[in-house]
Every structure is written in structure tokens, then in C-alpha cells.
Amino acid sequence: MVFVPPGRRDFKVAGVISGFRAEEEPVLAGGQPTPLVYHYNTGIIVCQRIEHAVVLIQANPIGFSLA
Image (cartoon, rainbow, N blue to C red; front, top):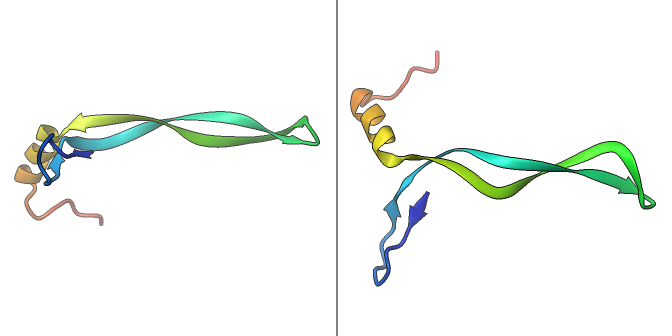
């Protein structure tokens, strides 16, 4: 999650997005509900403070092994 402070032109990092809220709506056919649903992002996010990411990066400067 980034922002631009008022009166500035540079971006600042506020946090790391760790999730979002999704909702579902029924899919209609001819105005009638079907067994299908459509999942969409509501725009509500869950964000962890950047300090948590900085601690992890400092503790693992070469990154995590994916193997």
C-alpha cells in the first residue's frame, strides 16, 4: 500500500497487503438465478504495517528459499 503525502510528489510505502474482502453475487440467466456465483473484490483490504515487512527483510536479507 503506497501513498503520496500532501504537497509532495514522491511515494511512501505504508504497508503490505495481506488479503482482501470478497463478496459473491448470483449469476442470473433470463432474470433467474443459476447455481453459479460471481466473486468480486469489494475494495476492502487487509494491510500489515510496513515495520513487519522490514523486520522480515532484515532477518532474511537474501530472501526465503522456495525449495
